[in-house]
Image 1 (tube, one colour):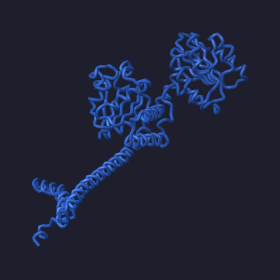
Image 2: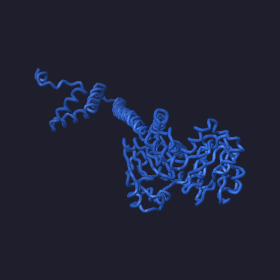
Image 3: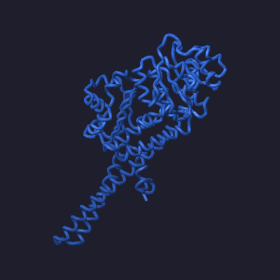
Length: 423
């Protein structure tokens, strides 16, 4: 049995190809069913996210066969997939699965979402009947390793995106972040990511203001947030503890005077402002106000770079945990193979014994002399038991393989000493 991991991700393929090989929740069910019918596939799990599509298979299927299957399923050129994919087998595949689940192979090092995505993929495969004992053990072990990486290293402790860094800074400034009111100016991808991080921190009071009302409506509906127009911002600004802005405006939308008036209405209760836009949305002079804390995208980028270095250091500790646990899993796998071999050996011996006993009983029923039957049974049992070891001993002697001869002698409890044999 061979474990194979075949994948396409953000490092090997453009987004246009990644989109074509991705599996929707509906197509995933039929894909797992198709793989189950595929020759040589005993177990399978498919992980499909915006940044990667990976197929994990246990069985006798080859890498080229999996590429052909993936190309056929999505009606793509196999050579195109082959040139943008990567493959791992056995121990290397185990290492890759553990790195993926631990966030070490992600676009953003240490991002936590991938753990849940791999777990969901495993559960989908289980419900589809494509997970048996070996994958059960492999993935449960992988999840335990990923949890250890999270708890024993700082891999996910520090922000490595400006959106996340903005929310983390807000959390440091306001201890009770969920109770704070937040104004998001803009409705693009960055603001949406900020909103996602705020929701994860339990923030409920969010308002969205944007030049294009339709986009703001879409985002506010998604967040269950309050909708404002840009013209309403000056009169409403005082009601927000946190303001995070990222628009494509060529001129500042929030000036020093606007913030100053808001602070007076707040009776100088501090405000935290983050300007993620280039050009700036918030006038830099706002920083001159005593109770206004303004951070720009450059300030956050510096924090992100420091945190990235910290995560890379944590990644080395995480890899050490993974390397150790790979050996634990492979040792278990090897032990299982030994158990399977012993089981096969005993089953074959029992089968041969039963066949000879049945033959002897038939001879007794036919009236053959019992003494002759016992002698024949003993002779055939002995020959059956000695056939394999005898062949190995002859082969070792013919090849002059001293080490194999000594190992066989020890295993069969023989004395290969020449002096002893002469006596």
